[in-house]
Length: 231
Image (cartoon, rainbow, N blue to C red; front, side, top):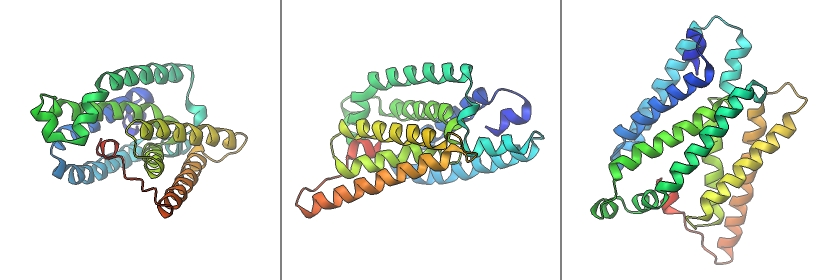
C-alpha cells in the first residue's frame, strides 16, 4: 500500500501488486506444512518493515498514511467499488471451481496428492485468491486490521460448528455483520472504521465461544473443522 503512495501510482493497483507478491511467496515457500508457520513469521515482518520504509518516504499528508493503516470507507470511490465487485466475483468463481479438490487437499494432503489432486498448485492458487481479497479490503479496514476480519469470523464459526460447509458460510455472515455494523456505527464520527469492525467481530467471537462452551457442557462436543482450518 505504501509503495504506490510513494511513487504516485494508484492505491488499488499497488495493493494488488503487493498482496499478490506476498501471496505467491507464502504459497511457494510454504508448500510444506512444517515450513508454513516459519515462512509467515519471516515474510510478515519483512513486509511490515517495507511498509514503514515507504510510508516514511511518502511526502503527502499524514492523514493519508493513517488511512492506509486503519482504513477509511470514504476512500472507496466509484472506480474502487467497481474493482471490488469484479474482484469478488472472480475470486468466488475460482474458489467455487476448486472447492472440492481444495477441501480434499486440506483434509489429507498426502492422500489427495496420491489421488492426482494438484496439491502444489492449489496452495499458491489459494494464497493468490486470499491476496486478492486482502487487496480490495485493505482500503476499508486498513492494512493492520484486515487479517482480523479474515481470521476472527472463521475462528468464531469453528466454535459453533464442525461442518466444512457451514464454517465458511457462518464466517461470511459474521464478517458481513461486523463490516456493515461497523459502517453504521462509524457514520457521523471521526474515528476510523476499523475499531468498530474489529470490536463487533470480537464480540461475535466471544458469543460463539460461550455457545461452544455451553454445548460442550451439555455433551455436544464441537470439533474443529479440520479442512477449513488447514486451508
